[in-house]
Image (tube, rainbow, N blue to C red; front, side, top):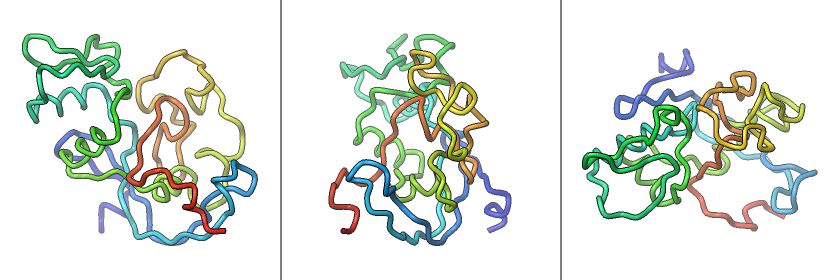
Length: 194
């Protein structure tokens, strides 16, 4: 598509920028990682779009209001609170930070509302590290203060997209550090062929 040639599009529902990941094979896994990441094996995927950044607190609060999320729910979404009968972000300071405290079902429901879906583990890994056998989205160098919010550099989350030097080959950000992310498939230690 013409959009794919430019590598990005914007969701009309929540304003999320998405990046395009082309179809084709890549080597999934690591021979040097944990046992459940081994062995490296070839996976071929269709083309797909993936969110450029993590979903923000402001986006998730908008979703909660749009679906009339139960007002008596006692769940804690990091910085989202009820104010004047509407969900809002506790402080503007955290509006652009990734939402945390969301379980898999809530993440899946958000994606459905936004007209998207959670990526599979294979899709997430290809978007994060590309097809050139790199250890991290930006290459093989360990994370530092320019590439990712990792190893508790900030002792908190950072606004999404704060580390452009940590961009993946397809242009996705925040694929390492900041907040944990959900994928469509459940953990299966037998996912990697023996």
